[in-house]
Length: 275
Image (cartoon, rainbow, N blue to C red; front, side, top):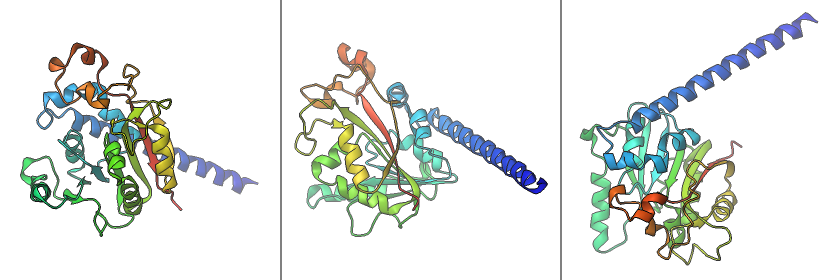
């Protein structure tokens, strides 16, 4: 009768120790994210002005991002999240910048130059393991089961409109480790609107559309958050999400849009099943 009691107590101690370790790791990761977010040597005043709308610390913590992960960012654009993720991962992790493969013609050369110039190892922002890759290639951007997280910030509408969303999701599923995260932040269309993101480029997409598309590809929706919700955004602008002038400094925005801020956004954490 004594032996099972001893085993149970030992197991309880192990569980408590594991819980404490997880809490410590979680807190350490959040502190590292906060440090990257508050790095004024790399991030500009305009970057930080948008923190109140984009909530980078809360968003990356929600996705479970840690400094020792391999993280791929789809469509880094001007580098707003890059200037947080790259320094965060520089020492112990790996940052992968993903852009669309350039189409033949004038844009091809510029696209190829992007691959060569996007990561400047002398800037102090990127670690030695940082890399830039193209999507939509015959060979996936990373080896199967090798990436901890793939993040898409405000970019799914473009992939959907161009017809490449399913390919992106399939590639993400392939390269992610079992249990790996596909994190999506996307301008949120109202569910009662009669719109089709495959034919209507408004920048907004219904949350139900994203969830259906991604879960059909094999992912599980682990959690949805209202971190980046904004009830002031009615999402009924004639020019779509671009009416909100998100790329302009607050001081230069029309008064109406200074009051509204940036778009209402869904924040979804999908997970590749472990089995």
